Length: 480
Image (cartoon, rainbow, N blue to C red; front, side, top):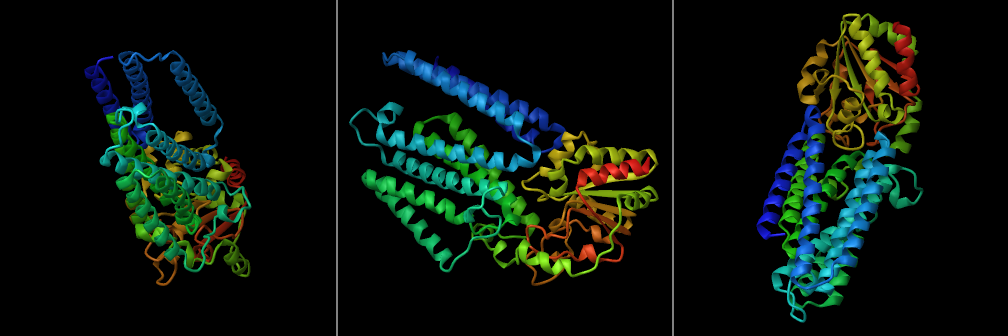
Protein backbone atom coordinates (compact mmCIF):
# COMPACT_ATOMS: atom_id res chain seq x y z
CA UNK A 1 0.00 0.00 0.00
CA UNK A 2 1.52 3.33 -1.09
CA UNK A 3 1.88 6.16 1.40
CA UNK A 4 -0.18 8.42 -0.88
CA UNK A 5 -3.10 5.99 -0.65
CA UNK A 6 -2.68 5.73 3.13
CA UNK A 7 -2.77 9.52 3.50
CA UNK A 8 -5.85 9.73 1.26
CA UNK A 9 -7.72 7.03 3.22
CA UNK A 10 -6.78 8.61 6.55
CA UNK A 11 -8.09 11.93 5.22
CA UNK A 12 -11.40 10.31 4.26
CA UNK A 13 -11.64 8.71 7.71
CA UNK A 14 -10.91 12.07 9.36
CA UNK A 15 -13.70 13.74 7.37
CA UNK A 16 -16.04 10.94 8.49
CA UNK A 17 -15.11 11.56 12.13
CA UNK A 18 -15.76 15.28 11.79
CA UNK A 19 -19.12 14.57 10.18
CA UNK A 20 -19.85 12.12 13.00
CA UNK A 21 -19.31 14.82 15.63
CA UNK A 22 -21.46 17.21 13.64
CA UNK A 23 -24.23 14.64 13.34
CA UNK A 24 -24.13 13.71 17.02
CA UNK A 25 -24.69 17.33 18.01
CA UNK A 26 -28.47 16.97 17.49
CA UNK A 27 -30.92 14.07 17.96
CA UNK A 28 -32.36 14.46 14.46
CA UNK A 29 -28.96 13.75 12.87
CA UNK A 30 -27.52 11.41 15.49
CA UNK A 31 -28.13 8.20 13.52
CA UNK A 32 -26.34 9.66 10.52
CA UNK A 33 -23.53 10.80 12.82
CA UNK A 34 -23.10 7.30 14.20
CA UNK A 35 -22.97 5.87 10.67
CA UNK A 36 -20.24 8.33 9.71
CA UNK A 37 -18.30 7.35 12.83
CA UNK A 38 -18.56 3.63 12.09
CA UNK A 39 -17.51 4.07 8.45
CA UNK A 40 -14.59 6.31 9.45
CA UNK A 41 -13.35 3.84 12.07
CA UNK A 42 -13.64 0.92 9.64
CA UNK A 43 -11.57 2.80 7.05
CA UNK A 44 -8.97 3.79 9.67
CA UNK A 45 -8.57 0.26 11.05
CA UNK A 46 -8.35 -1.45 7.66
CA UNK A 47 -5.92 1.17 6.37
CA UNK A 48 -3.69 0.72 9.42
CA UNK A 49 -3.66 -3.07 8.95
CA UNK A 50 -2.78 -2.59 5.28
CA UNK A 51 -0.02 -0.14 6.20
CA UNK A 52 1.50 -2.58 8.69
CA UNK A 53 1.39 -5.35 6.10
CA UNK A 54 3.13 -3.16 3.50
CA UNK A 55 5.82 -2.12 5.97
CA UNK A 56 6.41 -5.75 6.96
CA UNK A 57 6.85 -6.69 3.31
CA UNK A 58 9.28 -3.83 2.68
CA UNK A 59 11.36 -4.95 5.68
CA UNK A 60 11.26 -8.60 4.60
CA UNK A 61 9.36 -9.61 7.73
CA UNK A 62 6.85 -12.46 7.68
CA UNK A 63 3.55 -10.84 8.67
CA UNK A 64 1.53 -14.06 8.45
CA UNK A 65 1.54 -14.88 12.18
CA UNK A 66 1.15 -11.23 13.11
CA UNK A 67 -1.85 -10.89 10.80
CA UNK A 68 -3.52 -13.83 12.55
CA UNK A 69 -3.10 -12.07 15.90
CA UNK A 70 -4.43 -8.79 14.49
CA UNK A 71 -7.50 -10.43 12.95
CA UNK A 72 -8.13 -12.40 16.14
CA UNK A 73 -7.98 -9.19 18.18
CA UNK A 74 -10.38 -7.48 15.78
CA UNK A 75 -12.84 -10.38 16.01
CA UNK A 76 -12.68 -10.47 19.82
CA UNK A 77 -13.07 -6.70 20.13
CA UNK A 78 -15.89 -6.46 17.60
CA UNK A 79 -17.73 -9.38 19.21
CA UNK A 80 -17.41 -7.91 22.68
CA UNK A 81 -18.59 -4.50 21.46
CA UNK A 82 -21.57 -5.99 19.63
CA UNK A 83 -22.57 -8.06 22.65
CA UNK A 84 -22.35 -5.11 25.02
CA UNK A 85 -24.29 -2.86 22.66
CA UNK A 86 -27.10 -5.42 22.43
CA UNK A 87 -27.30 -6.10 26.14
CA UNK A 88 -26.74 -2.68 27.70
CA UNK A 89 -29.81 -0.90 29.03
CA UNK A 90 -30.22 2.83 28.50
CA UNK A 91 -29.84 3.38 32.26
CA UNK A 92 -26.45 1.64 32.08
CA UNK A 93 -25.04 3.71 29.21
CA UNK A 94 -23.00 5.99 31.53
CA UNK A 95 -21.21 2.95 33.00
CA UNK A 96 -20.52 1.63 29.49
CA UNK A 97 -19.08 4.99 28.46
CA UNK A 98 -16.82 5.02 31.54
CA UNK A 99 -15.70 1.47 30.74
CA UNK A 100 -14.83 2.46 27.17
CA UNK A 101 -12.80 5.41 28.41
CA UNK A 102 -10.86 3.14 30.75
CA UNK A 103 -10.02 0.80 27.88
CA UNK A 104 -8.75 3.66 25.72
CA UNK A 105 -6.54 4.87 28.58
CA UNK A 106 -5.17 1.38 29.22
CA UNK A 107 -4.49 0.89 25.50
CA UNK A 108 -2.46 4.11 25.49
CA UNK A 109 -0.44 2.85 28.48
CA UNK A 110 0.28 -0.52 26.84
CA UNK A 111 1.37 1.10 23.58
CA UNK A 112 3.62 3.54 25.43
CA UNK A 113 5.27 0.73 27.42
CA UNK A 114 5.83 -1.28 24.23
CA UNK A 115 7.26 1.76 22.44
CA UNK A 116 9.65 2.47 25.30
CA UNK A 117 10.74 -1.18 25.44
CA UNK A 118 11.21 -1.67 21.69
CA UNK A 119 11.08 1.68 19.88
CA UNK A 120 12.58 0.15 16.73
CA UNK A 121 9.52 -2.09 16.35
CA UNK A 122 7.43 1.07 15.95
CA UNK A 123 10.02 2.57 13.56
CA UNK A 124 10.68 5.39 16.01
CA UNK A 125 14.45 4.75 15.83
CA UNK A 126 16.86 2.16 14.47
CA UNK A 127 17.57 -0.77 16.78
CA UNK A 128 20.07 0.16 19.50
CA UNK A 129 19.54 3.91 19.09
CA UNK A 130 18.16 6.12 21.92
CA UNK A 131 14.62 7.46 21.66
CA UNK A 132 14.62 11.13 20.52
CA UNK A 133 13.81 13.72 23.17
CA UNK A 134 10.54 14.77 21.53
CA UNK A 135 9.28 11.20 21.35
CA UNK A 136 10.09 10.66 25.02
CA UNK A 137 7.98 13.68 25.90
CA UNK A 138 5.10 12.36 23.81
CA UNK A 139 5.37 8.90 25.38
CA UNK A 140 5.50 10.38 28.86
CA UNK A 141 2.41 12.52 28.29
CA UNK A 142 0.44 9.79 26.51
CA UNK A 143 1.24 7.20 29.16
CA UNK A 144 0.52 9.51 32.12
CA UNK A 145 -2.78 10.77 30.72
CA UNK A 146 -3.74 7.22 29.72
CA UNK A 147 -3.04 5.89 33.23
CA UNK A 148 -5.03 8.70 34.87
CA UNK A 149 -7.88 8.06 32.42
CA UNK A 150 -7.91 4.33 33.15
CA UNK A 151 -7.95 4.43 36.95
CA UNK A 152 -10.24 7.48 37.06
CA UNK A 153 -12.70 5.79 34.69
CA UNK A 154 -12.70 2.65 36.83
CA UNK A 155 -13.73 4.75 39.86
CA UNK A 156 -16.33 6.60 37.77
CA UNK A 157 -17.72 3.25 36.61
CA UNK A 158 -18.10 2.10 40.20
CA UNK A 159 -19.77 5.33 41.29
CA UNK A 160 -22.17 5.26 38.36
CA UNK A 161 -23.16 1.61 38.75
CA UNK A 162 -23.93 1.88 42.46
CA UNK A 163 -23.55 -1.91 42.81
CA UNK A 164 -20.36 -2.09 44.83
CA UNK A 165 -20.02 -1.60 48.58
CA UNK A 166 -16.36 -0.67 48.39
CA UNK A 167 -16.01 2.85 49.82
CA UNK A 168 -14.22 4.29 46.79
CA UNK A 169 -17.14 3.28 44.55
CA UNK A 170 -19.83 5.01 46.62
CA UNK A 171 -21.71 7.90 45.02
CA UNK A 172 -20.95 10.19 47.97
CA UNK A 173 -17.61 12.06 47.95
CA UNK A 174 -14.60 10.41 49.61
CA UNK A 175 -12.62 13.15 51.32
CA UNK A 176 -9.87 13.29 53.93
CA UNK A 177 -7.59 15.86 55.50
CA UNK A 178 -4.78 17.05 53.27
CA UNK A 179 -6.34 15.52 50.16
CA UNK A 180 -5.71 18.46 47.84
CA UNK A 181 -2.12 18.80 49.04
CA UNK A 182 -1.53 15.09 48.43
CA UNK A 183 -2.93 15.43 44.90
CA UNK A 184 -0.63 18.39 44.29
CA UNK A 185 2.46 16.56 45.56
CA UNK A 186 1.66 13.44 43.51
CA UNK A 187 0.98 15.58 40.44
CA UNK A 188 4.31 17.38 40.76
CA UNK A 189 6.10 14.08 41.40
CA UNK A 190 4.50 12.58 38.29
CA UNK A 191 5.63 15.50 36.16
CA UNK A 192 9.10 15.39 37.73
CA UNK A 193 9.55 11.69 37.04
CA UNK A 194 8.25 12.19 33.51
CA UNK A 195 10.88 14.87 32.92
CA UNK A 196 13.58 12.59 34.33
CA UNK A 197 12.54 9.94 31.81
CA UNK A 198 12.42 12.50 29.04
CA UNK A 199 15.99 13.69 29.64
CA UNK A 200 17.61 10.40 30.71
CA UNK A 201 15.41 7.62 29.22
CA UNK A 202 15.46 6.01 32.66
CA UNK A 203 13.05 3.07 32.83
CA UNK A 204 12.65 3.26 36.59
CA UNK A 205 11.48 6.87 36.35
CA UNK A 206 9.04 5.93 33.59
CA UNK A 207 7.38 3.12 35.56
CA UNK A 208 7.28 5.14 38.78
CA UNK A 209 5.61 7.91 36.80
CA UNK A 210 3.06 5.39 35.51
CA UNK A 211 2.36 4.06 39.03
CA UNK A 212 1.79 7.57 40.40
CA UNK A 213 -0.48 8.38 37.45
CA UNK A 214 -2.68 5.37 38.23
CA UNK A 215 -2.92 6.51 41.87
CA UNK A 216 -3.60 10.11 40.85
CA UNK A 217 -6.48 9.01 38.62
CA UNK A 218 -8.16 7.43 41.64
CA UNK A 219 -7.53 10.39 43.94
CA UNK A 220 -8.94 13.04 41.60
CA UNK A 221 -12.22 11.15 41.08
CA UNK A 222 -13.08 9.80 44.57
CA UNK A 223 -13.86 13.25 46.07
CA UNK A 224 -16.40 13.98 43.33
CA UNK A 225 -20.02 13.38 44.26
CA UNK A 226 -22.77 11.87 42.13
CA UNK A 227 -24.12 15.30 41.19
CA UNK A 228 -20.98 16.04 39.20
CA UNK A 229 -20.75 12.71 37.37
CA UNK A 230 -21.96 14.11 34.00
CA UNK A 231 -18.97 16.46 34.04
CA UNK A 232 -16.65 13.63 35.06
CA UNK A 233 -17.84 11.48 32.15
CA UNK A 234 -17.16 14.22 29.60
CA UNK A 235 -13.85 15.11 31.28
CA UNK A 236 -12.60 11.52 31.09
CA UNK A 237 -13.72 11.44 27.47
CA UNK A 238 -11.43 14.37 26.84
CA UNK A 239 -8.54 12.73 28.69
CA UNK A 240 -8.84 9.55 26.61
CA UNK A 241 -8.62 11.60 23.43
CA UNK A 242 -5.49 13.46 24.50
CA UNK A 243 -3.87 10.20 25.57
CA UNK A 244 -4.51 8.74 22.12
CA UNK A 245 -3.22 11.89 20.41
CA UNK A 246 -0.01 11.83 22.45
CA UNK A 247 0.67 8.23 21.45
CA UNK A 248 -0.19 9.12 17.84
CA UNK A 249 2.65 11.64 17.77
CA UNK A 250 5.08 9.03 19.07
CA UNK A 251 4.01 6.51 16.43
CA UNK A 252 3.88 9.17 13.71
CA UNK A 253 0.32 8.07 12.95
CA UNK A 254 -1.68 11.00 11.58
CA UNK A 255 -5.01 9.19 11.95
CA UNK A 256 -4.47 8.58 15.67
CA UNK A 257 -3.43 12.20 16.18
CA UNK A 258 -6.52 13.54 14.39
CA UNK A 259 -8.99 11.15 16.04
CA UNK A 260 -7.48 11.73 19.49
CA UNK A 261 -7.51 15.50 19.03
CA UNK A 262 -11.16 15.44 17.93
CA UNK A 263 -12.16 13.38 20.97
CA UNK A 264 -10.02 15.45 23.33
CA UNK A 265 -11.22 18.84 22.13
CA UNK A 266 -14.89 17.83 21.88
CA UNK A 267 -14.74 16.31 25.38
CA UNK A 268 -13.18 19.50 26.75
CA UNK A 269 -15.88 21.64 25.11
CA UNK A 270 -18.59 19.36 26.47
CA UNK A 271 -17.05 19.56 29.96
CA UNK A 272 -17.17 23.36 29.75
CA UNK A 273 -20.82 23.25 28.67
CA UNK A 274 -21.67 20.90 31.55
CA UNK A 275 -19.86 23.09 34.09
CA UNK A 276 -21.67 26.14 32.75
CA UNK A 277 -25.00 24.32 33.07
CA UNK A 278 -24.19 23.60 36.72
CA UNK A 279 -22.59 26.99 37.41
CA UNK A 280 -19.43 25.23 38.53
CA UNK A 281 -15.78 25.95 37.99
CA UNK A 282 -14.12 23.13 36.05
CA UNK A 283 -11.25 23.07 38.55
CA UNK A 284 -13.77 23.04 41.39
CA UNK A 285 -15.25 19.86 39.97
CA UNK A 286 -11.82 18.27 39.63
CA UNK A 287 -11.06 19.09 43.26
CA UNK A 288 -14.37 17.66 44.46
CA UNK A 289 -15.78 21.06 45.42
CA UNK A 290 -19.39 20.24 44.56
CA UNK A 291 -20.09 17.18 46.65
CA UNK A 292 -18.04 18.31 49.62
CA UNK A 293 -20.59 20.76 50.93
CA UNK A 294 -23.67 18.64 50.34
CA UNK A 295 -25.39 16.90 53.17
CA UNK A 296 -25.60 13.71 51.14
CA UNK A 297 -28.70 11.75 50.25
CA UNK A 298 -28.78 9.70 53.42
CA UNK A 299 -28.42 12.73 55.64
CA UNK A 300 -31.14 14.73 53.91
CA UNK A 301 -33.62 11.90 53.65
CA UNK A 302 -34.56 11.87 57.33
CA UNK A 303 -35.43 15.56 57.46
CA UNK A 304 -37.63 15.27 54.41
CA UNK A 305 -39.78 12.53 55.94
CA UNK A 306 -40.82 14.85 58.77
CA UNK A 307 -42.55 17.36 56.48
CA UNK A 308 -46.03 17.11 55.05
CA UNK A 309 -46.65 16.99 51.33
CA UNK A 310 -49.81 16.88 49.27
CA UNK A 311 -49.96 13.50 47.57
CA UNK A 312 -52.40 12.02 45.10
CA UNK A 313 -53.01 9.00 42.93
CA UNK A 314 -52.39 8.43 39.23
CA UNK A 315 -56.12 8.99 38.67
CA UNK A 316 -55.90 12.38 40.40
CA UNK A 317 -52.94 13.36 38.24
CA UNK A 318 -54.73 12.18 35.09
CA UNK A 319 -57.73 14.36 35.96
CA UNK A 320 -55.51 17.43 36.37
CA UNK A 321 -53.66 16.70 33.11
CA UNK A 322 -56.88 16.07 31.20
CA UNK A 323 -58.22 19.50 32.15
CA UNK A 324 -55.11 21.43 31.18
CA UNK A 325 -54.43 23.32 27.98
CA UNK A 326 -50.64 23.19 28.15
CA UNK A 327 -48.47 20.48 29.74
CA UNK A 328 -44.68 20.36 30.04
CA UNK A 329 -43.05 17.02 30.84
CA UNK A 330 -39.71 17.13 32.70
CA UNK A 331 -37.91 13.75 32.49
CA UNK A 332 -35.22 12.74 34.98
CA UNK A 333 -33.15 9.77 36.02
CA UNK A 334 -36.16 8.14 37.70
CA UNK A 335 -37.80 7.86 34.30
CA UNK A 336 -34.67 6.19 32.94
CA UNK A 337 -34.51 3.70 35.81
CA UNK A 338 -38.16 2.73 35.30
CA UNK A 339 -37.71 2.63 31.50
CA UNK A 340 -40.88 4.63 31.23
CA UNK A 341 -40.08 6.62 28.09
CA UNK A 342 -42.48 4.63 25.89
CA UNK A 343 -45.29 5.01 28.42
CA UNK A 344 -44.59 8.75 28.59
CA UNK A 345 -44.84 9.03 24.83
CA UNK A 346 -48.20 7.25 24.97
CA UNK A 347 -49.38 9.65 27.68
CA UNK A 348 -48.33 12.63 25.58
CA UNK A 349 -50.18 11.19 22.58
CA UNK A 350 -53.38 10.81 24.63
CA UNK A 351 -53.14 14.39 25.83
CA UNK A 352 -52.40 15.66 22.32
CA UNK A 353 -55.47 13.82 21.00
CA UNK A 354 -57.52 15.81 23.52
CA UNK A 355 -56.21 19.06 22.05
CA UNK A 356 -53.66 19.67 24.82
CA UNK A 357 -50.30 21.14 23.90
CA UNK A 358 -47.49 18.92 25.20
CA UNK A 359 -43.81 19.77 25.35
CA UNK A 360 -40.74 18.14 26.92
CA UNK A 361 -38.20 20.18 28.89
CA UNK A 362 -34.63 18.87 28.95
CA UNK A 363 -31.95 19.95 31.42
CA UNK A 364 -28.41 19.45 30.04
CA UNK A 365 -27.24 17.49 33.12
CA UNK A 366 -30.42 15.51 33.84
CA UNK A 367 -29.67 11.81 34.27
CA UNK A 368 -26.22 10.31 34.54
CA UNK A 369 -24.50 11.59 31.43
CA UNK A 370 -24.76 14.51 28.99
CA UNK A 371 -27.75 14.05 26.68
CA UNK A 372 -29.14 11.11 28.65
CA UNK A 373 -32.74 12.33 28.47
CA UNK A 374 -32.49 13.19 24.78
CA UNK A 375 -31.34 9.64 24.04
CA UNK A 376 -34.20 8.13 26.06
CA UNK A 377 -36.83 10.20 24.28
CA UNK A 378 -35.26 9.50 20.91
CA UNK A 379 -35.41 5.77 21.67
CA UNK A 380 -39.17 6.14 22.24
CA UNK A 381 -39.41 8.10 18.95
CA UNK A 382 -40.76 11.22 20.64
CA UNK A 383 -41.16 13.92 17.95
CA UNK A 384 -38.14 16.21 18.05
CA UNK A 385 -40.28 19.32 17.66
CA UNK A 386 -41.79 18.59 21.09
CA UNK A 387 -38.40 18.47 22.84
CA UNK A 388 -36.97 21.77 24.12
CA UNK A 389 -33.70 22.60 25.84
CA UNK A 390 -33.70 24.49 29.12
CA UNK A 391 -32.90 27.92 27.73
CA UNK A 392 -35.65 27.61 25.13
CA UNK A 393 -38.49 26.65 27.46
CA UNK A 394 -37.74 28.28 30.80
CA UNK A 395 -39.51 31.46 29.78
CA UNK A 396 -42.75 29.54 29.15
CA UNK A 397 -43.22 27.88 32.56
CA UNK A 398 -45.12 30.88 33.94
CA UNK A 399 -47.89 30.28 31.38
CA UNK A 400 -47.92 26.47 31.63
CA UNK A 401 -51.00 24.87 33.21
CA UNK A 402 -49.27 21.70 34.41
CA UNK A 403 -45.63 20.74 34.72
CA UNK A 404 -45.21 17.00 35.33
CA UNK A 405 -41.82 16.02 36.72
CA UNK A 406 -40.86 12.37 36.27
CA UNK A 407 -37.96 11.30 38.45
CA UNK A 408 -36.07 14.61 38.33
CA UNK A 409 -34.91 16.42 41.46
CA UNK A 410 -31.83 18.64 41.52
CA UNK A 411 -32.48 20.06 38.03
CA UNK A 412 -35.82 21.54 39.22
CA UNK A 413 -34.76 22.48 42.76
CA UNK A 414 -35.44 26.16 43.58
CA UNK A 415 -32.57 25.97 46.09
CA UNK A 416 -30.38 26.92 43.13
CA UNK A 417 -31.67 30.46 43.66
CA UNK A 418 -30.78 30.50 47.38
CA UNK A 419 -27.36 31.78 48.39
CA UNK A 420 -25.31 29.42 50.50
CA UNK A 421 -26.74 26.18 49.09
CA UNK A 422 -24.33 23.79 47.31
CA UNK A 423 -26.17 24.24 44.00
CA UNK A 424 -26.56 28.04 44.25
CA UNK A 425 -26.29 29.58 40.79
CA UNK A 426 -26.92 26.33 38.94
CA UNK A 427 -29.37 26.97 36.07
CA UNK A 428 -32.52 24.91 36.62
CA UNK A 429 -35.75 24.16 34.80
CA UNK A 430 -38.13 26.64 36.42
CA UNK A 431 -41.02 24.20 36.75
CA UNK A 432 -42.00 25.79 40.07
CA UNK A 433 -43.47 28.68 38.06
CA UNK A 434 -46.15 26.49 36.47
CA UNK A 435 -49.73 26.87 37.70
CA UNK A 436 -49.82 23.24 38.87
CA UNK A 437 -46.94 20.85 39.42
CA UNK A 438 -47.16 17.04 39.46
CA UNK A 439 -44.09 15.20 40.75
CA UNK A 440 -43.60 11.47 40.37
CA UNK A 441 -40.95 9.88 42.61
CA UNK A 442 -40.50 6.57 44.36
CA UNK A 443 -39.98 8.34 47.69
CA UNK A 444 -38.97 11.65 49.23
CA UNK A 445 -35.29 10.77 48.99
CA UNK A 446 -33.06 13.63 47.88
CA UNK A 447 -31.19 13.90 44.59
CA UNK A 448 -27.44 13.53 44.09
CA UNK A 449 -26.76 16.92 45.63
CA UNK A 450 -28.32 15.67 48.89
CA UNK A 451 -30.66 18.67 49.21
CA UNK A 452 -34.29 19.03 50.21
CA UNK A 453 -36.47 20.34 47.38
CA UNK A 454 -38.94 23.07 48.36
CA UNK A 455 -40.85 22.49 45.13
CA UNK A 456 -42.20 19.26 46.59
CA UNK A 457 -43.84 21.10 49.51
CA UNK A 458 -45.57 23.90 47.59
CA UNK A 459 -49.36 24.12 47.81
CA UNK A 460 -49.67 23.77 44.04
CA UNK A 461 -47.57 20.59 43.96
CA UNK A 462 -49.07 17.08 43.95
CA UNK A 463 -46.72 14.18 44.73
CA UNK A 464 -47.55 10.86 43.05
CA UNK A 465 -45.37 8.14 44.56
CA UNK A 466 -44.44 4.94 42.75
CA UNK A 467 -42.52 3.48 39.85
CA UNK A 468 -42.60 5.94 36.95
CA UNK A 469 -43.65 3.37 34.35
CA UNK A 470 -46.50 2.00 36.46
CA UNK A 471 -47.72 5.48 37.44
CA UNK A 472 -47.66 6.79 33.87
CA UNK A 473 -49.40 3.69 32.53
CA UNK A 474 -52.13 4.20 35.16
CA UNK A 475 -52.46 7.82 34.03
CA UNK A 476 -52.90 6.69 30.44
CA UNK A 477 -55.69 4.29 31.45
CA UNK A 478 -57.39 6.98 33.53
CA UNK A 479 -57.34 9.47 30.66
CA UNK A 480 -58.91 6.89 28.34
